[in-house]
Length: 631
Image (cartoon, rainbow, N blue to C red; front, side):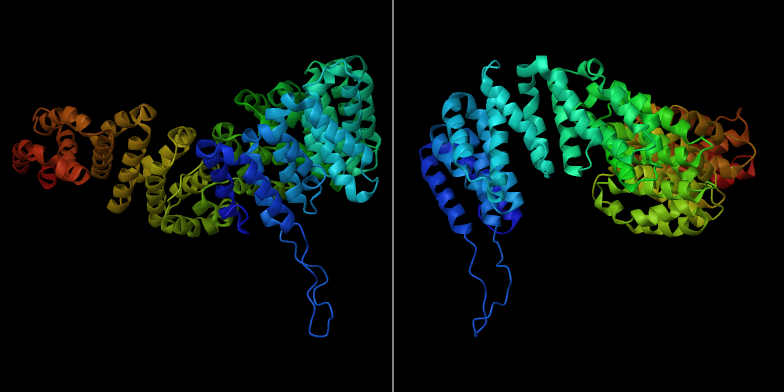
């Protein structure tokens, strides 16, 4: 199973085998390693070309069955903690064979396994491992065939160097090799080098300024994409090693800000954005304090004339948003929302696209910011400038792209249509939502697209549309986190209250049920005003329809709060329903509770049937006709 061609079979097997060895057969580790090496060697041979009956080659390139080799790499990664007594054999397998695999995914997996092994055992075998790698670098042919393994060996040496004496000349030599390796046109290699740099930087602290300036020069002046990306990774690695104060000490932000504003040189703007993206990615919340100063320039880059700058701005925005803390969201969001009020369409487009990039925030931040963002993006869809409209649509698509609920992910295009053309498409989207069988948890991005559609549906004149909106609300509340729903209560409740007082009984019934579901999911604390509002309408003189809707809603709310709440409420309801000194419409409202409470509670209401018969009989003899009708 470890070498099975299907990933879903290989993956659990590569976890299970090391666990089994650790728990029951640690003595077998050397034999298993030997078997894994043999399996790799066997599967590393390309099959001979396929030929026809006349010996002519049918297939130009034989198919490389790389999956078993990937299984070996994954297994070695999970065995890293068990191989302490077999380090030399293992690294003679990695260097030069496994780290020079012809398939990029296998090379990457082998590097991950070797790195993990060094992290665990490197300090104990430092001299021997360093010797293996130095011997290889001396003896390996200087040909392109060995470039991949050379780069990977330098990365491993960088990992080893963190355990070496910082004053050693070897550390400085390794650091120099790592910086040279940053030019490799492979993001995985560049990221791995950047990860090695922070622990080594203190070794050259006196020369750090020279290195930082060298990397900034490459980042802002080079014409080569891979070199610029590598310099961005290197710069971020250096700053992480030196500490966040180095950003100011070496004028890094000043240089990047000047470059991002250089209207005459797109390469400088692109390089500055690469640098900001990597600094954000590697420094995370430490870099957050600088983000507010960057945002105005980032907004302008979204409307840049150069497509490469626009792409770099988008990647930079995603990196920034993915690292924002809740405090960062509070700092950033007002500025972006203000950008939507700009008269300049390019600035407005930038603000919209950055708001869309907030879809890449952490889930906790998403649930707090999306309720503010999506209504603004919906407003943008009707902007007078076509490019701004297009940016709004794209931003909503970005929010749709991070939805984790598969049922809603499948209908995102339908929801987006409803947001863009509410008069034509709302009904159709509601029908699809009604017929969707929700199984998975409904996340914050899902709610951000569903709630505006429901909010508009409640404002629709059509009885059927309002009924569907109430049904959907009732359905989704049981599958949603209460804290994700709380921000939407103020927008949902007005429509739900209106539907609760609808002349059509069916709409009132569905709305009451939805209200009960909401109270059951979120608790009474979230609905401080709803019970007083229902009580007010329960005894409203002007309309029996309002009294009926309020009675139905109150019954469902009491059901949502449970049997204890029913017990506390029944005494007052029974007394008021037969209290002759109260106005007839007040008695009528309380009498209506006896219609809907049994419907809501079902058999749980049986203990109260005997207690409500006397007030009902009394109501049948009431002097007011509508009270008699209710009874």
